[in-house]
Length: 140
Image (tube, rainbow, N blue to C red; front, side, top):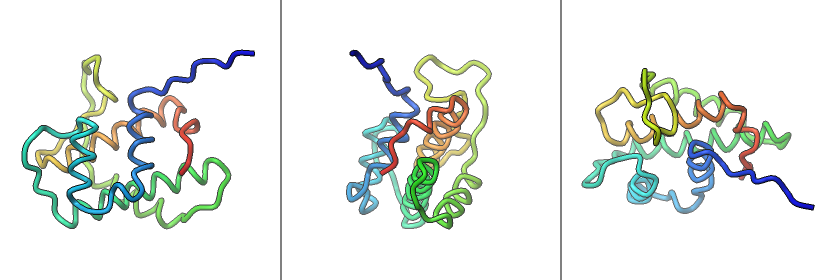
């Protein structure tokens, strides 16, 4: 018996990578490495504040909690609420004609490099929500 090919979309792969960072997202340098490694920011110096780092961890923990809840597991509902507040603060815009390589038709509408990277994560989350693919992302 063969199993169907269940290749993740680029958006789902990004969300999976983000929620599974675990101890690999322990400080601002780790966040910079993640953002660069996922091609969410340009190369070069990225000034990451403690507030930026805290928002990234809050978003990661909330997405992880939402995936757990969707899988019928117990999770911190307050973590989901805190992550929602982070998402509410990330500005994105819809692209009329997104590029083929785009994770989502949503694009960052902010200038700050770190917030642009996090807005790209938000766009990927919107994409997997729209397709229903988020239900297939393994909770951590």
